[in-house]
Image (cartoon, rainbow, N blue to C red):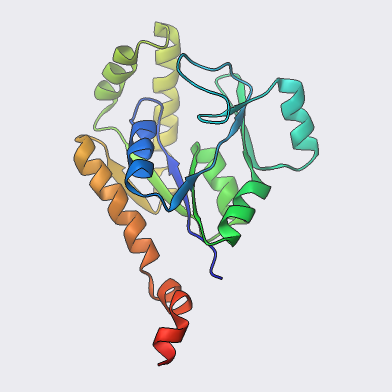
Length: 201
């Protein structure tokens, strides 16, 4: 059986990545979201095992020692990591897997899975990004400024992405994301392997 596709979606905080991913998963039930581990506390409305697997820093470090993570990084003082075993198991069944990670994580994932597809979600401008972060109401002013500084750093690595989607209009950005997913499933190599019997006829 051919392995499922692996998508890595990267964006600065506030660019609309989580909303786009949620809409994509609602539209396409063939994609499974990889649930990352994190040491940060849950935000209001978040649930264990849905948005993240929330663990202590000590437990996270144990998982690092056990080589559990495909990638891990420290972001804004919190640790985040992706389970390597879970991804390998799901892909082996033919399921597509999606990761929501940062550019550092995407770089590490590509080293282990060169066939992964790197999609960058870009806000229409830094000012729009600032407005979205303020409107979200989750961060203090100094945290927002740190996130904007991190966004500028993120943009230095955008050329590593395979696809860039500008999230100015949500519906258009979602349509673009769905188009990328569909096109990757229709590559000649995947279709030939998936439908070998039909093609042999």
